[in-house]
Image 1 (cartoon, rainbow, N blue to C red):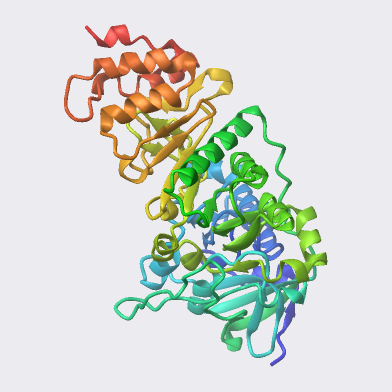
Image 2: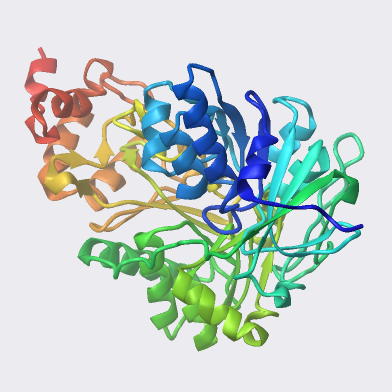
Length: 498
């Protein structure tokens, strides 16, 4: 069947106030480019006329200025999940203009199918191509679109002329059955293919095809600064120690790495190490640094949910698609982040924290405990099931005004039970097999910045017994001092010891 060609404006006009929309993509990669921008413009006109207009939006992870940015700027988002990183949307969330709920990325799609959230009315899918019988070659990110497309009443396909049809074969689209019929996911190596190279949808649900012509818009990561480089070096030295001790097999294990400059610094150092053998990745994002490792032969394969790569690298991959075609496989988030597979493969999990406390708990999401930053993302999926779970962060931020090692995290995303190792620019705290006080001593001595080390020792001395000797009256003294004076260094624990 031939599908109707629509302008972005025509497609946007079909989406009513209150609709629930699900999009393709994971991070900027694979997200729609034009329909939701026009929907945002329509929302602004409706608001100017005094009429309400908001939608519920579900995605794979974060999106772009075309989606979260435009819709948040127009105040056109009612409910949003499961992850975001756009400044305009962050402002809406923290002022309660948008109802954001944070979820583990492996869980959202199945919870949608279980009926926990509003039903998907429209799915918007970025594609390299779509056939008359509803077979879609996806772009550079998959996310949760396999579930959204199955559930949606209507589907728009954004065919992006920047995406080559030679992407066919770089996707592995499969969904597990829902309980009580779910079976094992037969992935025993990152390179195992178990699904379809295309997303198959009911062609009768495709109400129109919209054309776009734009890369994902991911900016190149900056060169690692001195702090990021030191963290990267510390992570790699820790892994080398585990390899030499035989706690990591000589053939090495698959890696998962988050996004950002610290993650890029880690991957760069891994590529420079002659002791670490060529390795594979089972991860949620494949970024520029991984592509460089592939070109060097250091990373031999990456199972992922998206290619979160800069426009320049995206263009390079498309020009050399034959080289990368058998080295990258993109899957739905429900598979790329699946706890069963992560644990089976022995994935080494490497994620970042906003802050860690001296007993090993991690805050990944809320600045000073109250303001949502981005979300938990996939860190919990990998942390709770990884072979080794590593969290890293700078020891201080804001020129030393904030210590990222604190007495008690102001918001808890990952408890001490899920955290094996904490690494900062100061060093490494291996928490395995340590009781709370032993963990505190390791973290203060090895991870805290020297300007805060004595303050943290002072806090630990305030504890009045128990296995985890918190001094509850002073547990958030660092955060209070920052809010009141602009620096955590102004804590005076003497006031709490009376």
